Length: 265
Ligand SMILES: O=C(O)CCC(=O)C(=O)O
Picture 1 (tube, helix red, strand yellow):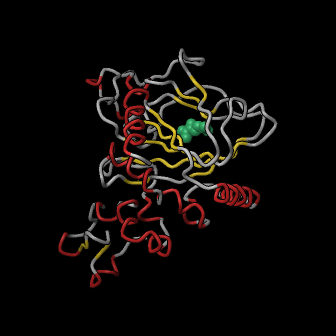
Picture 2: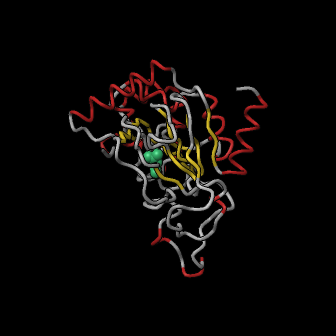
Picture 3: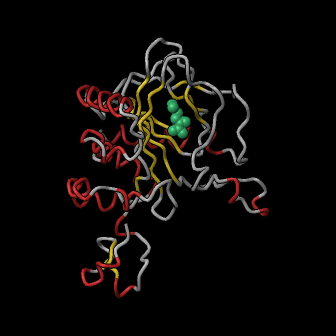
């Protein structure tokens, strides 16, 4: 990615709340990802924490230009909070729009205080959803639709669809759609007679509660393969100690070796 391209993506996120990075996965990687999703789905394996389930899914946090854009908004210690697969069959999709972060994040209804006056936090980017297009995203096959600029809207409630200005994001397979979690979005209707495959990879600020605590879930060999970068991506060095500080190793996010019997999970 050239400097001009980087600046353009940053501006798009600032103006519209989203951008599309083309060509982050190869055609081969998309084929592999699709096969793995189909295989897992046939075996009725839950399509979450996919980095532990096939090598190709480890790629999603190993793409330097993508990390650069994410970290530009969420800080150098931005943390991955999920890797999910999506298989959207023909005849499904459509329906209402939503914002993300409503379960453990800043758009959780129960966390609004009376003094907030039904206004969510819009001044800063707190988290992104990054969708990998494993299929081409087209006008008719269930591609994600977004409302440009809606991330600035302070009310927590989302109006019923169709919302003025909503737009289907068309993108070639191998691209990623990056959007501010405050952006109103949802799948569009898949009427194309083909299945749409995608990966959803939410990222958050290190201090925000994610959907899952991936530092506790990631398999040791997956973490090893991610090297030094993996400690940042999975947020190991930023974990809250559950022991006395003298017993805690910040770097590795676990008890010091002499206290290893107190290791959880
Ligand atoms: O399936 C899609 O295109 C939208 C995904 C979505 O709404 C989400 O990840 O929150």
